Image 1 (cartoon, rainbow, N blue to C red):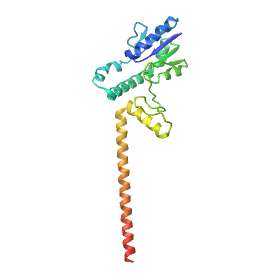
Image 2 (cartoon, rainbow, N blue to C red):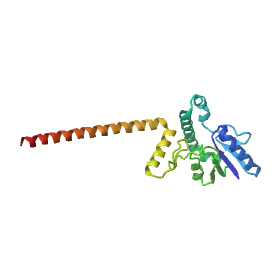
Image 3 (cartoon, rainbow, N blue to C red):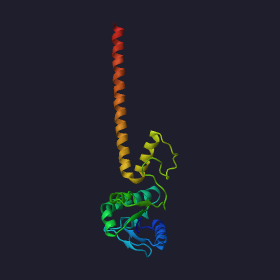
Image 4 (tube, one colour):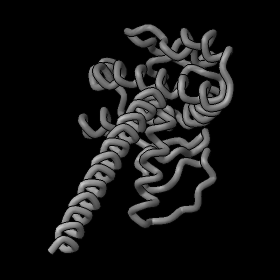
Length: 205
């Protein structure tokens, strides 16, 4: 069986995947790393597109904390958009029978599903649930299943993956809330004014 490996081209992801690949190779499986610029001496096929992640490394190195994580996530998302467009063709061209997917290659299983071949996820990095059913491990939130908790989880994902879009959404929400409050205030003032006029009329009568 020929096994295709998909993981980001960075040591923390690539090293454990190449170690696994060598063990599988020792069991007479063919292995190939797809969309890789290196594979520690194992067969690899580079991406037709540029390596977005490694090209962003100089910029990422100047950031820290959430800003660095967010840039990394956005870059990986951009990379995956390009990969998903060519993945089925890449699998066919290299005669891959099954995929082993790093969690950093978001939704790469869609390519396997499209072609009807087996795939497994290899969790060699911090688990992050982007569905919103459980909170991202970065936040330290308790696992709850209430509608409020699920909404909080989804908002946490949006804030982590696309902070600019999340900030814009929050700005619009605050603006809408402020307008609503102003309308409520105007309506209350009108009501008080109406009550005052009615009171004056009753007094005169």
